[in-house]
Length: 213
Image (cartoon, rainbow, N blue to C red; front, side, top):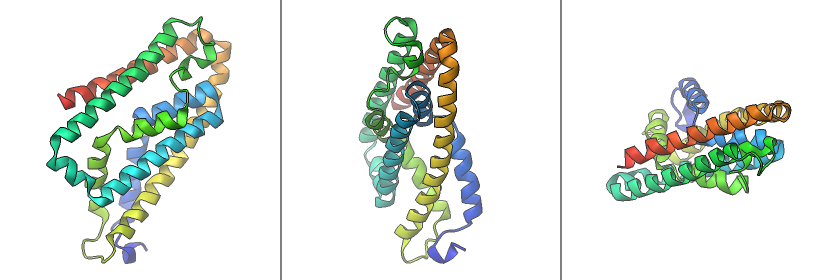
């Protein structure tokens, strides 16, 4: 159906995209904790930050930014180091709020690092240069090299990826809102959840730092 637009084996691409979207990562985790701590509206603000960040990365991928990062490895390593520092900052804030429950309310401990959720989610998404390299290696497998307008093929693939992301992040946001109701009744569980999420962010940061080393 989409082969006339240079897209190859679209159903395999959709299956792979769903698997990729479902993999846990800093972006989806941030959307979840923001929705849980600050409600549906703030959750969608964070989600839109992720959507915009992904759209920018996909545009850069189509424009050849991945090739630039391969040719200039120091730029790639610098971006990864900055991303690791930012993730560590968010994780430390979450752990701090979990250990000092007297500051924010129990229902807000998971979102204390989430002020300005749109901007923070956007920055979190953009500080992931690995995504550019991954998107290129994944996308090119489903683009017909003989098609005269590969940008259109990339646009179709990007739209499918964003649709899957919208559905998944929406589920996380509404699921997070239900968690928030439970956290209000069990503030100790909220603080434990905040600590676990903070530890996960620090783990993500450690992986990025080791890769950059």
